[in-house]
Length: 89
Image (tube, rainbow, N blue to C red; front, side):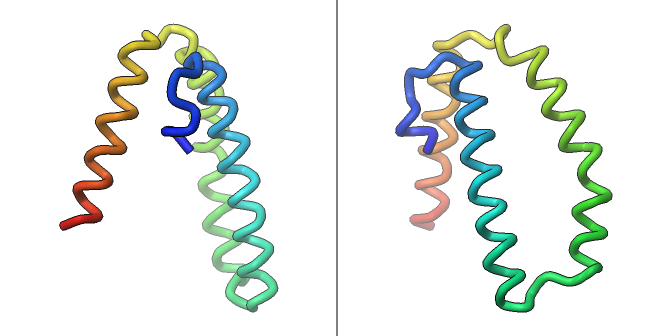
């Protein structure tokens, strides 16, 4: 996804990635629920992590527009390269 959005402004990249993660997470949750793999324990763990997610989102709103576009592009490409190398090993 990051490679497809390479060149987006930091705010736009963050928003699109957040929307993508939300949609895929909901689809995964629905699929796991249908397969009988989600119970109360997993929902409890998810509920305890929700405040951290909200805090991270609020922090990203404050910080995202301050990130240099060229630095963001370079760091995302570096991360993708590191991931590809890790998959090859």
